Amino acid sequence: MSIDPWLLSKLVCPVTRTPLRHDEASDELVSEAAGLAYPIHDGVPVMLPEEARRLND
Image 1 (cartoon, rainbow, N blue to C red):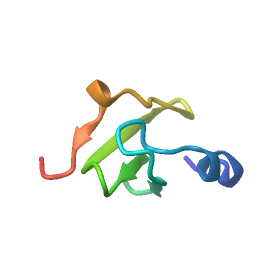
Image 2: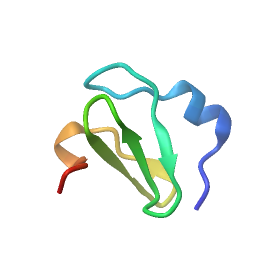
Image 3: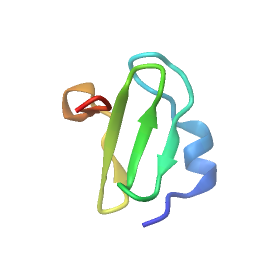
């Protein structure tokens, strides 16, 4: 599923306040700075650090 480019440009990582990138293969929003990947459920980004996956996992 694709995320609206306008929405993606407005979203930032809640931990580091840095921009996110959309990983289309895993359908996650990735924060390289925090080392976290936030899931997207039914087109809605879940921007909770406790729900994020660590990138090194």
